[in-house]
Every structure is written in structure tokens, then in C-alpha cells.
Length: 191
Image (tube, rainbow, N blue to C red; front, side):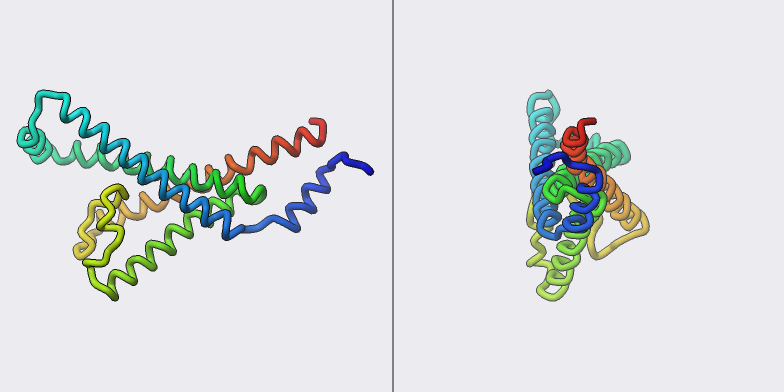
């Protein structure tokens, strides 16, 4: 029995087992969501720890933030983008690693799960009313700081930037997860 693998074998495997794996993408989305929640909690804890160890009080901090909201907004925006990028990278990695082939497609599928779940939650919220908005009730999930009733051009742009960063992170993660399998294939070929 010949156990030597050739590039043709991998091509046949990709043809037979490649494509988007919905289950892998779902678990990637769960990983992305969990990572985003955990990173948000860590950042919030760090912010609280910094605020409680300093000599500032809440009123002074609030007054400073009100006097210069641009700085607070920029820092919050950068942290939000970083959390989304890292979270979706982790989700894409899980999906790419589980599916073995088509890391980019797996990353996109992870991102699509997030879009589908967001649309379903938005529709259910519109039907049932705002008091059943699950995402608004979760304090650990970062959201774009836009009032849902007053969506402005800036809010739409911010939402699109967050979505694009999430997609980028998921695709890069999918490629990273798939890279492990490519290393194994190169080893099998004696490269």
C-alpha cells in the first residue's frame, strides 16, 4: 500500500470535501461572539481598575469626557474595532481549522452567521418590541453607540466599518486556521 501523498490527492480531497461547512462556520461564529464578549469584559475591567486606582472621581471623569468627547469616542472606537478584529479572527480560525479547506470561504461564512443572527434579532425585536431586544440587554456585547431610532449617516458609516473589520478578521482567521493543514500537507509531500 502506497502511503505517499501527492498534490493530486490534496486536490481530490479539496474537490470532495471543500466548500463552505455550515457547522464549522457556526462554531466559528460562536467562538467569535464569545471572544468579543470576553475581550469586552476584560477591557471594561481594566477601565474600572484604572479608574478606581487613580485619584479621579466619577464626576471629574464624566466632566472631562463631556468636555472632550472626541478623544473618548476615538479611543472607544479603536478598542471596539480591535475587539471585533481579534474576536472574528478567532472565529475564522476555528472555522478554517475545522473545515480544512477554503479558509476564506469559511471566514466569510462565520461573518454571514453574524449578519443572519443580527437580522433575525432585529426582526424579532421589531415584531415583539424593544423590551425584548436581547442584544441591548447584554452589557458585555459591544455595539455601535447609535440610537436605533435615530440612525444617522455617521452611525451607518460606523456600522459598515465595524462589519468590514469583522469580515477582515474572519477571513484572516480562516486563512490562519487552514494554514495548519497546509503545513501537514507539505510535510506529507516531503517538502
